[in-house]
Image (tube, rainbow, N blue to C red; front, top):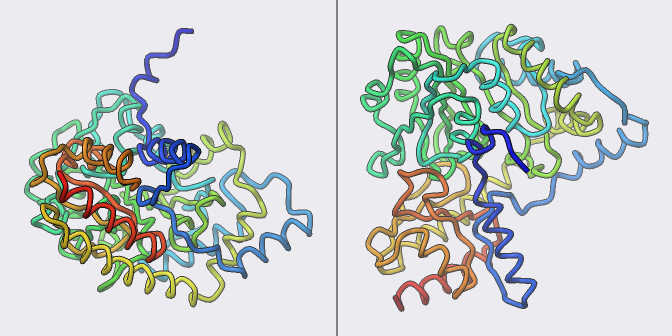
Length: 387
């Protein structure tokens, strides 16, 4: 079978590949500690589940408008107005089955072949994949450990050319847990205005922040009309399998993204959107408990990693990942992650799964129990110190 040339430009998400290998080993009887998948291990709050069940029982199982039900779009707009301090209307909102379609559809709607898109590296692998699939040139922007896995504004400016069309930013960041400061966001906004750039701001982890307040570039002067805000429910509300995300963007772009929804998914499941309404309007008690538990797990994992000879790890400011430095070890990060899985029964991800600047690091998710974290660290310490 002959495939379209564009398929050679489409990447994947290594976390799911490693998960498949780990499941295969488990099927053979091997015990695996899973530290590879970025998925909260908490149950979705009961009031959200109850809202979905009630929706199903009311017969809410039919098509909705492609951009989402108006009640949810209105509530999302009100939430963005309250949290970012900008005037957003329901017409700026498109609801999608998960947040990834916002990346995909925005790039398809905005980017022509040979445009340039700057993206963080190491970063969520789907950025580079979708940029390349769109026919654009993917331009990696290095995140630096010595800066808390932030990038240098000077480095960003050097990468901007007349062909640069869009910049992707992500804070809190996957895979590093790095945070853009308010000063960073202000400087990025100044560059975007000066060079006439659009910004895709991935804020899916905004609620999993351990110190300070979230800084959104959409809040900066002149950025409302330049920003595509990507957000969703998977991380905050432990709703990964529900597939519910949204984008907030200038209305002309929203109309094109809506057309792409019509041509691909038709709409997001009605009862899932009703669950999203309940989540945004309901109590934040469990979300706050999730974050407090993530903080406790983070501190245990960081301390345990720094106790392994040849491994170091700075404390992440958000999300639920540690990006540990393994450059002092005699194996590459890919060799190390493969050996940890095969010999120690610990599933982690090589930093190279997140781009070339991830070499020398491994990513570990602490979205799992303290017992799993402690056991994973014990196995890692034994395996690494025996190298």
